[in-house]
Length: 542
Image 1: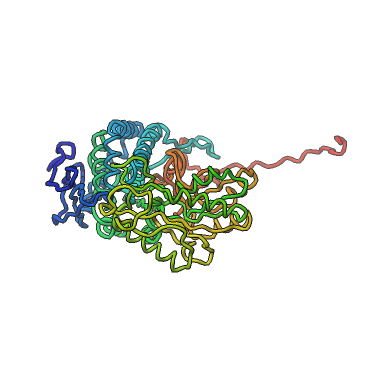
Image 2 (image 1 turned 90 degrees about the vertical axis):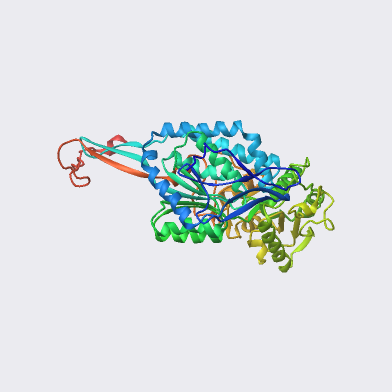
């Protein structure tokens, strides 16, 4: 067997036009590189240049997933007993290695999922920030000393690790989100089995190698590749088999509900970060130029492929026409292309062919509802491309930006997420109507309002049903020390990031230390203090 740090990258024959390397990828189980037990593989391709194959990876079987779970279970006692500051030091090492190799990781993320270099840099920086934040939390994994109601007794609380955590993340933030999940998990003393996104296995493989290079013991984080319906489902099924103590999932609401059901019937903790139909409200008092920039970025940054992307753009009727006219001028000039080859593009390709197919189905829904299409024409081809497209349309998976107006609350497209570069515009009569519309979808992840009326801002942040709200800012963006997550169909109330995520990866352990040498029973052996009647004429004090 070969340890992950003892093997160099193995390159396979590649025929891509830029002579970019094609890598032989592996699972990492107990620190060892492994192929799938049946030898099956799949490949990862660049969605901006489909002829560019990044690598070949194991299509993991149930046996592979169970081997990873067994390795995590075996590593748990020693890792959970490792002092938390030591765990934090290893996490800090990870952050420093990410900084050292940031440019290469950013380029790899852009190559594998098509995000612009600037956005990939943001994703990797979020992973760095998470490591540096939780390095210090290793020295603040606090419990409490609690006063007892009985003499000669001490009460304490401690945070304890849950055990083995199954980690499943989507491919749109393949550096930031797995670090959001696994860094607090291992800081609390848990071990992990990480199922990489099917569309980002190369980046996941690179990140897992960095984690081991930082000094992470074998078996603490185990990486398996494959499809959601394969390795991902095997990981979820293992909850029923008693092999997992925690599942953390980022993805669709439908899959999240399934995972929640499996975890619920086994009394296993689940962190579910799901979809969104994020509202952005524009009020007459807003700085319109600022609001247009925010709405434009919210809707079309990352080609609309964020769970926090703008869904319903809700515009007050008094400024509706002016706002739409100015917004459409920006949309029509959108520069689209491969960021690795062309500078200054707003967004690149879809994350993969699968996401492109799903997006086109979302557009069909908007048009079936009777929404008024102001702009957009499906997939970009050499014969069908907007003015701002640059590059070879046939080389990748690119989409027009789409805007639908005349959307009302009774339309399906008002309520359903369209994962891609498309926004739906809704007209509001007044503030109360706008707030109602913002709360009317089944989701509750992110939200935003543009207003310079302080009372409107206050009423919006107090009345919105969402996990996150921006005031005079977009629906997107998070910092490593803020809680991230949603309510309603967007999640089950757990949070990523910041100190709040520690609650998701630990449990409270209460300790009752009896020093008296005898049995003392709370609520029963406590002396009752009687009140004393005093003969005081209170009227004389008046």
